[in-house]
Image (cartoon, rainbow, N blue to C red; front, side, top):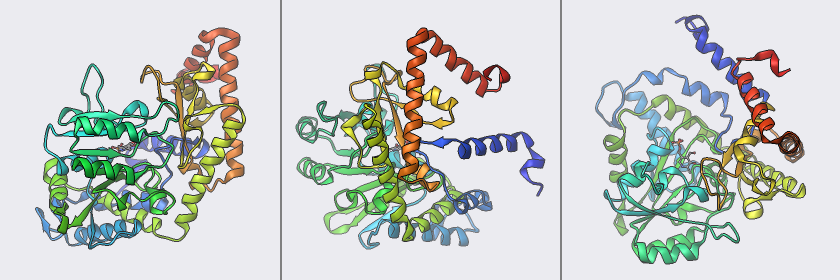
Length: 433
Ligand code: PLP
């Protein structure tokens, strides 16, 4: 029963350094958040000791009385958090993460080699939505299914629903996935549903990024139109790393997906559930159901809009010219800077962001943009006035990069980044001063 610091000071030390990084810097990665102490406690609990393959009341292991109670509670809270009628919707809370939730959902809905359409990765879609390159099918969703990407209207950078409609007529997908990793605007679920109805295709929404905002009813409601909705639990939902699959229980329309989804999660794609994570998800969903959550979600969006406005006021270009969500996609190409350079300079300055493709990028390896999100800073109680300061810091980081690039050529910028990176790895220490 000795504590971690005694048994393994090396790992404790790494955790301490990462804790310092998370709380001394500015966390602007759109897919991250700072989960609550209560959720972290549940996630670090002895529930990790327990095997519980199967479902509540039907397990392959003994000793699951309390685990059954936990999973039932988590399901109840998941449905409550999204205001869903348990007669019409069910949820599987066992997916280990978003990718496994998505693959299990595809396994439940369609057959191997069936056709699916998802938003292309360079346009903001996720790997698990059927991504492949000209050279390789490198994701399970393109290896085991035939996929075709839909995209953005180049003039507005909004999802091109009319083009998707035309493509679906030709490609005849069995399933369309909506939702994205880097798309700052809300979705037109009604338009997607109309296309799916015509093609007799399933509509699946992956709301990983926006689920915390959807739970607060601050964005359009995918549950009104979709057959299946998946989400991660660790982005705007502010829980631990895990996934959820919501499915319709509409037996009348032959859409009773419960058995198919449950069997796709276990045994098709997973083994024993991570009960510590399920406990932590349950705690986070409890927090999502509290009245304060709405205020949090509103503030996340208000902060993202403020960030967008501040950057536009300074003359920068944003994809779609703004945001409806927690996410801002900044197109750096007019400045002649790549996303990876700014990411590294910001890292040095204690601002954590990530490079990201922007619409029309030639290469996904050297993307021309960065993705910013306000969920984590809002969890630290930041409001619009704070975000204006953050925008100023980002502006200075970009200006610093431009100066370095302009005055000394890109070699100096590269050297600056190399030294900064080495310093972060603790190899040159004092040289950076
Ligand atoms: N779906 C979307 C839209 C995502 O953005 C992500 C991750 O960023 C995932 C799924 C995958 O989630 P995970 O990394 O938990 O597997």
